[in-house]
Image (cartoon, rainbow, N blue to C red; front, side, top):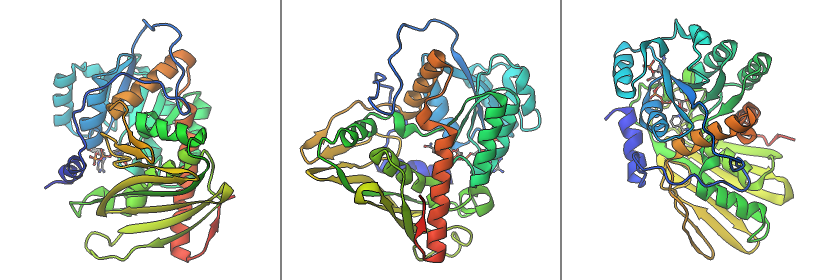
Length: 374
Ligand code: NDP
């Protein structure tokens, strides 16, 4: 089984539909875009995907077939056979197809408004900066980069070029997630007391880039643990004050010679809120559990492609099931068409903050010390 198949079968085992249809785009209350004031009838935004791997192919391209205000206008790939296949499948003209050597010529292409970097983590830094220098707005997959310094340089490059920079934090647009954020911020069950947030899966192919530190930046924390860090931030609406962390045991030295196999961490948040985080490449787990003064909320699955499921101490949550990537891309396109900006809650600055917290988690696990964050 290939790695992509392994990830997909894990998600499917969790009940994740890879071909779910887009439901109505509901407008979130807190981390969201405003309703369109009038129906937009201008040009659709043209998006170019950079790196035609599993996420670009199975999620983003599928989502872009369902978005009224943006579409797949171009591709950047190092694999000529993919270029041929995608041109046919998505009716992409040859002039909108680039490889990594010709990529900078995208500057002259008026069809492309947004470049979306979907490459291995270590390549985000270079391609976001090149896209910014080409004068294109940029979306970048998570984690934003491998280091804090890289994130800072990416933000600066986009600021200098006067282009928008966003991170593909799709959960910010997902209805169950938005509802839990609303309930937390509006204190429906009182104040948040404790959050337990876990995301892990069983990794396949031992040769893949996700297991190579120079390419991945780290192990499951960089790949999926970042969702738990994000989760604790969007639920509380606050930033962590300190962190302790522990690496789990290495049970598979072949796969985990370069990156961690699993990792647990504990964040202190303001108002005596504690967050327990866990991530793993050896355990299938996915939940966001929040206890409040007068009740609880649980999302599980909480972070994969859906359907997300949720319940509270008052019963099941029944909310629209959406195609995450279509939902996110359409929300970003609408916000941009109305304001010329990407939503601020998925900005490069947010990606940078997460990178600081991931770095601190690693430092805490390595040193055994509590790391102060504020
Ligand atoms: P894949 O390995 O499936 O695809 C990466 C693609 O990048 C390759 O297919 C290839 O495309 C291109 N590439 C260029 N150089 C290299 C290289 N040296 N090694 C490997 N690939 C190379 O990765 P994913 O699609 O799973 O992940 C890509 C990014 O998306 C990551 O940052 C990941 O964290 C993120 N992601 C986000 C998800 C989310 O839910 N938000 C889910 C999954 C991934 P080509 O042949 O076209 O050049």
